[in-house]
Image (tube, rainbow, N blue to C red; front, top):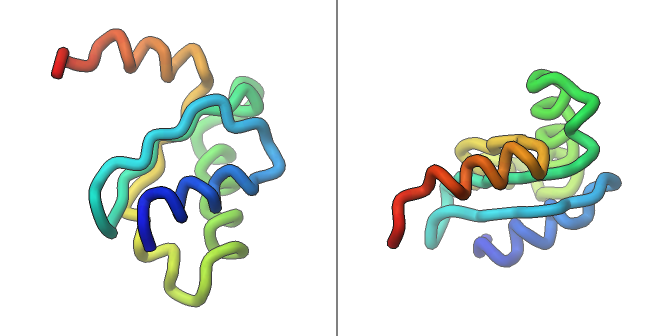
Length: 87
């Protein structure tokens, strides 16, 4: 699986995806996912929703290509961007 393929899987979620960063050139990937739908959810619910989607959409054991998913609101994502070191 490529990062672009994984991004496509996340964009199939039934929530708005405001921002997505797939980190890494190959599996296992780390994903940073921002959605306005997460504003009303605690971290446990966000994670459950994301991993349920991955298990439903990826072939057997495909979710092993994902090491971790950071789930955040668009505001949390923007705050994270401000703190990133300049490249």
